Image: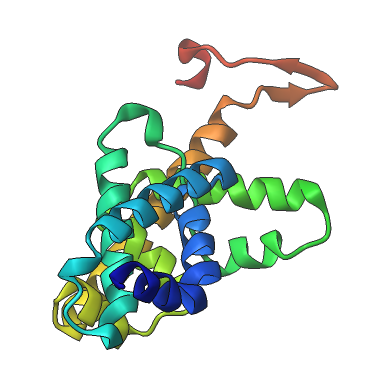
Length: 187
């Protein structure tokens, strides 16, 4: 009886939750694995769902917890997330631009804690409201806004640091010849 209810409640959330898992992990296969793992966990815990109206937040809480558990393993550190410049670049038809944007997002995502990744992904990529996030994380809206802001700032710093390091590692060009600066030459 409860299993039938689970599948009925999952049906409208399925495509969104699956897409969320893929965005959260930054990889289709890893996202699919996370989604399947979370669905199995949710199916086993369907008896703990007290209110059918809160199925969405209950399911996403399970997904987030499964994600956090996987993240604790070193091999699970590939991710993705957003800024306006990256969003514009990613929406381009040029595959080089999409690759570059994805790389920036991966770099920005590595600076975040799992909870920050989840919040930013749900807010920026899945269009959840601050109120919905506050309910899901059981935190005041002001706290959610502050965490989103701090998360974006961390991402921005990580991307800027990457871009600065990339620029510094490029060899200097003079009269058509490339040469690398030694520490003594730089000073």
